[in-house]
Image 1 (cartoon, rainbow, N blue to C red):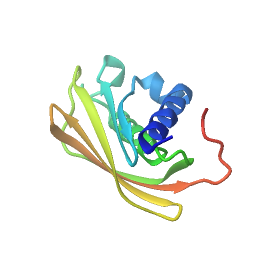
Image 2 (image 1 turned 60 degrees about the horizontal axis):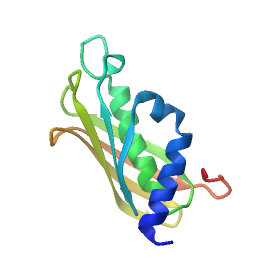
Image 3 (image 1 turned 90 degrees about the horizontal axis):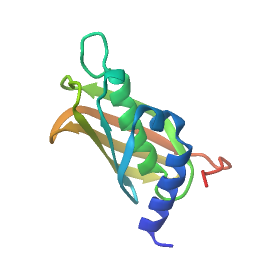
Image 4 (image 1 turned 30 degrees about the horizontal axis):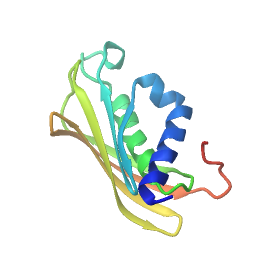
Length: 140
C-alpha cells in the first residue's frame, strides 16, 4: 500500500469512529501523507451569543484536520498541544475549510500548521503539536 492509500484508509477508519467531528458536521475533503483538508458549514447550532461561529467549532475543525494529517502515515498519533489565533468573525452559512500541513516530524513528535479559511480568506491560524502513541490501537 502506498502513502496516499494508507492516508485514505486511515482517514476513512478515523472518520467512522469520530463521534465528535461527525456530530459537529465536519467533513474530510482531502488527505495525503502529512496533510489534510476538512470542512464545516456554519449552521445555527454553531453560532454563539454574538451571532457568529463559536471559536470552539473553529478549533474543532482545525483539530480534526490536524488529526487526519498526523495519522496519515498509519501510526496512531494524538495532539500534545495546540494554539489558535482567531483572525476574523465567521458568519452563519459560511463554509469553513481547514488545511493542515506538516512542518516537522521527528521521532514520535510532529508539528503541524492549520489555516482555516472562508472563501479563501484566513479566519484562523492553528499550530498543533503531536505525539505518536505506541500501543494505541488505530481505528479499523
